[in-house]
Amino acid sequence: MPRVEMHLAPGNRLRNSLATGGERTFLAHEVIDLDGLWVTTKLRTTVDLGIGLPRVQAFAAMCAMAKVADYDKADLLFELRERGRFAGYRGVRQGRGLAPHVDPAFGSGPECALGLSWLDQPGMPPLTLQHRVAHPGGNYYLDLACPELKYGAEYNGPRWHAEDRAAYDEDRIAWLVEHDDWIIDVFEADDVYGPGRDPGMKLRQGVERARRRYGALSWSGQTRDGDAWLG
Image (tube, rainbow, N blue to C red; front, side, top):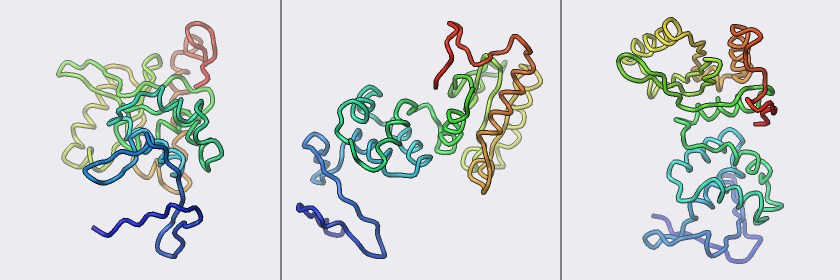
């Protein structure tokens, strides 16, 4: 392991062509001793990822941290929004905007990207993650769904949806569409990350198809209490 170099005085940010450096301040409760190595706590790490990475990557990283969190969402919101600890930090507005939507139920980074695209689209219904659909042979789960409209979105990534699972995935989607009346859009990497692609528009169009199917009885941007959903 290379020797860790620390500068206590300000103004010693690393500046060279090989690395991007920055300076951060830490309070005593924001670092812990992990087998002799000082590291940031899970909460502070989540905050740093949320304000330091590009928006989509930041959201995916925050959701990944939520899977191993030793804090709850109220702690994250307090740290970013109410405490004022990070006021003036570059990227803090981004972190504050993402924090309410952080959810460990997202199954992968691309699912987080799709979820963020869903949330960014105006007039979309509430989002349900890993929605369970009963099947005679067991249960099927949809990555993103609006159960009231029977609309779902699936991300087929190469890691979990390789060729050896292609037939199963096709049968699963076919059963949901033909036997349980779902409308499902399937996304792959190019649909989410390809140049010029807009997954949010595809999601919105899918929701609109589902609403048209139900006609005047479809969900129209109102909760059951009559209040507009603000996301």
